[in-house]
Image 1 (cartoon, rainbow, N blue to C red):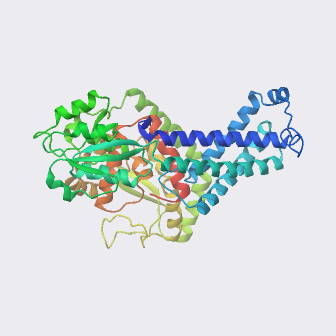
Image 2 (image 1 turned 60 degrees about the horizontal axis):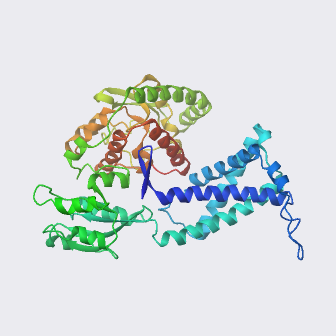
Image 3 (image 1 turned 90 degrees about the horizontal axis):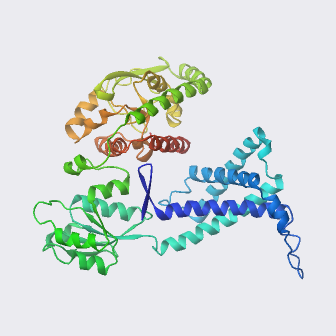
Length: 484
């Protein structure tokens, strides 16, 4: 069963996993404090009984110490997140997980040392205490994850669903659920629209296929399989829509959800190639209130000013390195299509040779593009080439978060090929965006379609909270060097 945060949907077990691990980390730090103080050691010799001074414990673990332990917990969990240890769709082996966990906890130790240097009053214990804490953390986090793996493999937190339909949307939903092992859903059955659709659906173990051609048997089958949700992904609802069967499912307490809505909830994107225009018209979203726009613009101004000042040394060093590495100007300017199709000049650090498109004409940059210089390759990897766009944000031509801007040459072609492509121009383009943190690098029409799927989801669900999530995930993307 999913829950919703800032218009994003996550399986409930993911929340339980993260919260439970927070409790494990908190308890590990408390246990280290008890051992460091000798409270648990004093009475653990053979032949003796442990004696705990509860009055001493009550006095020691006051509110201030609890807050300091909470700080350690939060820092550890942030470092675990940025080392991809909370992505339950990625299941590294024991050795890889241990190495990444050790790296995350090492970074957390360095980060906490910096905090303690600035704010010595939040220090909990000495160096031996830190060593003991790390040992407890490694032990109990590994045990917690092993326990969670055993529980999740039993699929007790997965919600059984039936997919009504056998067209492209139904197949996409089935494939997404099968690929996302920790999405929180399990397909119990698929109600085919006709007997002839059986050959077009890939048979998967544990999924029961049955025909709903004559509009009977859907409720009985859903009830028999213990289904809690019915996903309606029919190709054509005008011919034989199973109103009676779906009404029975709904009255009995099952959730009935439209296929496009479920796909959006499951994947964090829309599907422009198969989306139902009627659903798009009547669905919630695409509202940009005055307060949201005001806060977004205020954050853009504050962030761009702070970052331009903070990154001034990086800007200066990058400019020098570009001049030393290759001939040409330091900055690269190019026309892009912005909000309401306004043309503006985007500014970036030059990462390619001068006149890179002289012989080829307009061309998307490739992942290992030979036109990229040595310094350019480095600054593209760490996104340093994007820093000058902060000036575009300050001027109001761009936002910090939004769809990535495209050149007019490509826009004209993509609008002709891709449905709803013009919807991108209802929002200001951004330095980073939902498509960049979810999909990554792309340099083809197929990639442009997939990125538009994510961009439409962002514009439909735009909020300050979602912008904060995108910024945090952008930092993770930059650190990992994945995406664009």
